[in-house]
Image (cartoon, rainbow, N blue to C red; front, side, top):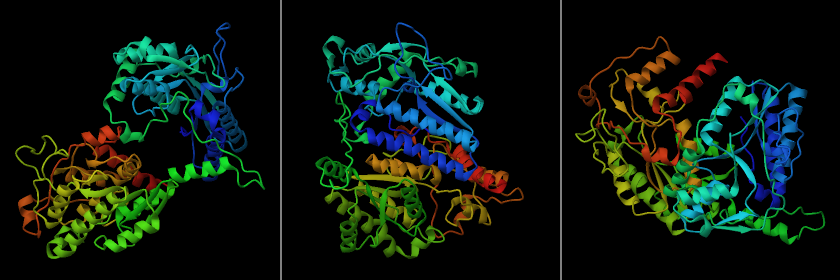
Length: 572
């Protein structure tokens, strides 16, 4: 499903070449990749109702998928129409089984404040006026994101290849009436908080589409305007928006300004606009410095950043070597540091009991030195830590509430956990750190000796106790998002819920090795063969879910990101 696009119409008037590059060239790259892979059984291209152009009030006729001509009126919609042509061409030339959707305006929580409803919500929350383009009587249909997601699900499973489906809400509203509704929900007087500014270069007065084909598939709009708008305005009124998007000042302008892309003609390389654009791009560039190159998570971070096209480097310094750290930072000039370096012990944490100096140098002194240096240079640090600093107790029994980020660590039974808890006490003093607590990490490689599943599948005996766990394939990409958003503070970085060791092994047997068998023993029996006790606990993932809605519970995540991957590999 191809959702990616530059989509803000205002920006397309000032930076149209970027829209061509992303919406047309980007789609072409994706289509070519599908052609070469020859494994795609359904390609859903998400377009917009704006490709039809302006609808007439007088004729009051809706645009249907296969009868209405495409007549885009702004650079954004023109690029979306161009991308549609490429999709259809790949369908005809290479038999790509495509479906195209053309949808109304979508709104809901987590939408960037450059869009009308979040922008109006933020402005009224801040006590600032809403500036409407022109008279504000342009008419739009607004669909809640949950209804839009339902529509895509229906089309994915029931839509026919080489068909186009309009996705639209039942009712139309003027932009002025939307602003008035938001003012009332925020307790603001619309007459005092709404003003008018010059209109766009061209502002379509109406988009009116026929959704009969989608309704015939069984889709229905479930979220009413009042219900959807109320919960959306409430979300923008209660969130720390800068933690999501940083400084929003430019997005809240009536006409957001973006750098105009200049095309440097040969012989005119000193174009001032070109230089300005270059400097702007330079200022916005993200550069990541990773520590932990040879480690499990450090290697995964590098692969993900490469896939996402980010500039990144691996640090060469030992964490407790301050001069070498400074040299790394000077060499790489990072905007973000991702610290996945640390000593956990091999084959397990028992190693730390006899190597305490090395553990302190890296896990305590080195980590704090890196964070302190980064703070002095205004660099954000994402630090991969552990949740193995708690143990079930009377206030947090098995099956009871989980430990939150505010709870004081109560487990220092192993030297490894002791050093990790020690560092957290100090990290509270730094406002440039995103501290992520992982537990019993798991990835889709079941032959990886660091994988918790590999470990318990190869133990002679296993204790059966419920625990919080981290599915790296799902959560590590979110760590990069959190770094980019410059989130700070401590987060329990585990999938919601708990799962027992026996339940994990049952999945292992069901999906991976049907002949597998294991034997249990008690925690008391386990303690006789260990150099240090082990942490067993449930971590509360509420804060993480608020920052990243949609994270799967631990069992569902294991099935999707680990075991079904193995099943698919075996089937291929």
